[in-house]
Amino acid sequence: MTGAVRATIASRPRLGIMKFASCDGCQLTILDLEDHLLDLLVRFDLVEFAEASSYRSSGPFDIVLVEGSISTPEQAEEIVRIRRETPLLVTIGACATAGGIQALRNWADHDAYRAAVYAHPEYVESLATSTPISDHVAVDAELRGCPIDPGQLLELLTALTVGRRPQLPDESVCLECKRRGTVCVLVTGNGPCLGPVTHTGCGALCPAYARGCYGCFGPREAANAPSLARWFGRDGRSDADTARLFSGFTAYAPPFRSVIDSLGGPPIASHSGEDA
Image (cartoon, rainbow, N blue to C red):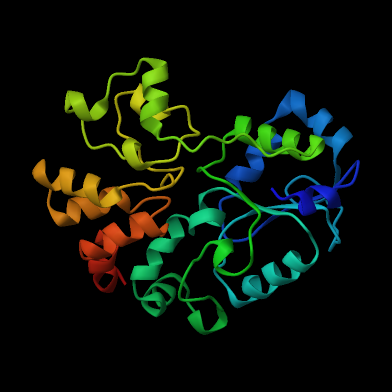
């Protein structure tokens, strides 16, 4: 967060929380802050949050939190308008930061899916792709996850109120496993795990139950996803099975996307015509 942005934040900044194509899970995480909600309202002027209030505002804002991917022409126009109305835009969740699970359609036949789902697809205006917010406007900060971690959210909001950089470590899930004393899923042979290339934030929840990481928080910086994919292949998995492992909530994030493309695309791409 730059000094110029910090200087624009008022003593009680106007906060907007908005969504595009998503499940609302990240917004519900905000509502689930419970004991911290009153502190949030004391420190921020919450002027737009359709999930929680009928009061609406079109701006201007000091800070905007955005959930969801861009999936329609209307959304593509609206995010540009929102960006003009705020000096600080933060994307929250896998949909906003990586396109979400719905980005799997980016490898498939958009028109075929639309015809299969809607009786009158000609009435439905949607884009052929589901893309992260950063593909359309500049983004000042990101909170990853599906959904986001409440602890990281509180750290971000606290940092904004005091004008410092949020302390959001860029570590792999493996380090969380080490701190928890969790036995490595890969070492024990209990199954594949994306933990070595996935950004921390979940507390290594899945490995704690002897299940491999699904990559909900997306690739960490400088993630060597191709190396992990090759390791999966040496372990006897087919290209299709390995592509499926990366084809989750953050499949369209560039490091994961490149692996999926090199392996022939996600499984959904080879079956879209048949399913439609």
